[in-house]
Image (cartoon, rainbow, N blue to C red):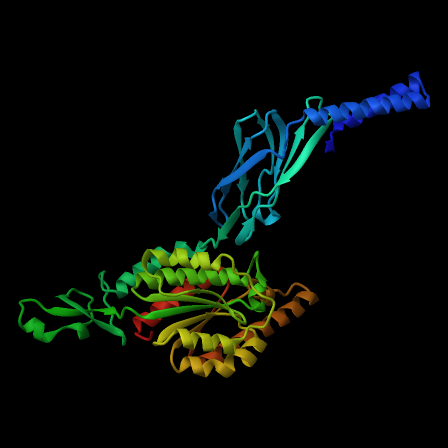
Length: 431
C-alpha cells in the first residue's frame, strides 16, 4: 500500500479543522478513524496489481548510438478497472528516455506501453522490475506491487569505421585486377591476358601471347586468396584505459571490424580471438555475409578485465588454433612493461610461423600536450608527453626488428591505417 499526496492534504485539513473547531482528544481520534477508514476503503476499491499479466516484445539488439523500443503488454485479469502509474525500470546505461507511464486498463482488456532506450554503453542491458501503483477511486491510497518481466537488450559495437570501407574496397579492386590499374607483387598470381594500354608496366607484356596475336598482350595479376587472418583482441587492463570518451577496447573493435570486412571481401578467411588470461570470445569458420554479424555479437558483451594479459597463454592459444600460416593482428597497447616483460619473450614463437601485425590505440591528448608551451606546467606536460612518444617509438622499432609490423594511431585513424597496412601486405604478397 502507498499513500498519495491527496491523503496528506486531507490529513492536514482534518488537523486544521479539529484544531479550530473541536480541539479535544476525542475529536482527534474520530478524525483519525475517519481518515483511516477512507484510506482502507480506497485501497479495497483500487484495482489489483497482483493479477496483472505482463509480457514484453520489441528490439533485442541495437547498434550503439541508435534507439531501441521495448514494448510492455499489460493484461488485466481481475474484475476491477486498474488506474495506475507504471514504472519500467532499466539500468542507467540503457538510456531509458521515459520509464514512467500512465496506465488505465479495464477488466479483461490489455494495454501496451513503449519504453524508448538509447544505450550509452556497449553490451547487454537487462530490464529490472516493473512497478505498478494502482490508485483507488478517492485518490487517497494505492496498491503497489512489482513484477519481474525479463528482457535483455544487446548494444552492438557501432562500427563507425565502415565509412572507410568503400575507398578500401576500391583499392582492393585495383589489386584484384578488376580495374584499370594492374600491379604485381611477390605473392600475386596470374589472372588473365588483355591488350596493352598506355601506362601498363612493360614487364607484364607476354611476348609469346603477343606473337600469336595482332596486338601486344599483357598479363594481369591478382593477390593470392584464401589466406587466413586472425584478429586477436587483448582484453587485459590496458584495454580498459579511456581515450577520449571510450575505452581503448572499443577503438580496437572498430578497427578489427573494418579489417574483417575488407579481408572477407578479398577472399581471405577471418577469425577472432579475445583473450586476457583466458579465452573471452572466439569466432572461427564463419564466412560470407554471416561474418560481420558473428563478430559484432561476439564483441558486444566483452569488457576489459583489470588484470595483466597472459601473453604466453595468448600465443599458445593462437598457435593451437592457427595451424597454417596466417596474418595475426594483435590489437594491444604499446606500454613498456606489458610489451617487454610479457610479449617480447614469446614473440619469436609467433613470428616463426605467422606474419604478425601489432595495432595500438594512441592517445591524441599526448600529441596536444607535446606541442604545448604556454607556461611552466605546460612545459612539464610537454616533456612528459614527449617521453611517452619516444618510448612508443622505441617499442615500435624493437618490434619491427623482430619482424613485426606496427600500426600506432589515434582512435579515429587506427581502423583506416590498419586496413591500409593489410592492403600493402597483400599487394606485396607478404601475407
